[in-house]
Amino acid sequence: MGIEPGAGLTEATQESVIPGYGLDEYELITSSTPAMITELENAIDAEEDIVVTLWTPFWAMPAYSMKALEDPEGHFGEPEALHHLGRLGFGEDFPDVNEWIAGATLTDEEFGSLEDMVVNEFGEGKEAEAVEKWLEENPDVLPPLPGE
Image (cartoon, rainbow, N blue to C red; front, side):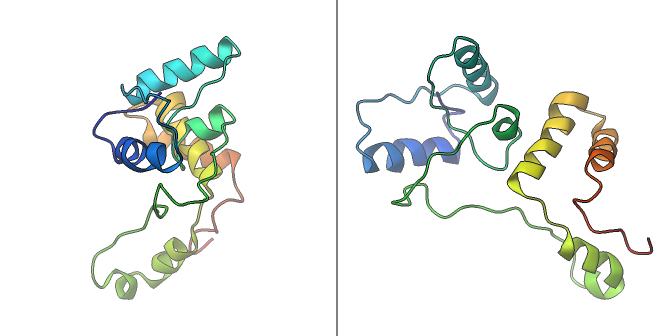
């Protein structure tokens, strides 16, 4: 069960992974991320096997104790990453904050649990509250803020 037809993950699955691993007997059904999550939940509830197109970091990975399948031949390509962005000169203007940002890293599991709290537990418009609660529950994840 897949996500949106235009997603990069969908394209990689259809164009590279399925043919690359000789999985042509399987059909990738595209839909939407919420529909894929619903199918995942239905399969879990029914104790049935299912393969879904998930990614990391994404809240559903830790929420459903999912396991990513290995890609020994590299058909998905190089992993993507999340990066901090700032304006030219930010580091010179705010060296303490720049150093803190450079030291702030999250594992896929940590990011996934943060995203789960923001998206699912608190929802739109309550992002700051969700982050605050997550940081209270995970006090050792990030380095202390400058001046603390």
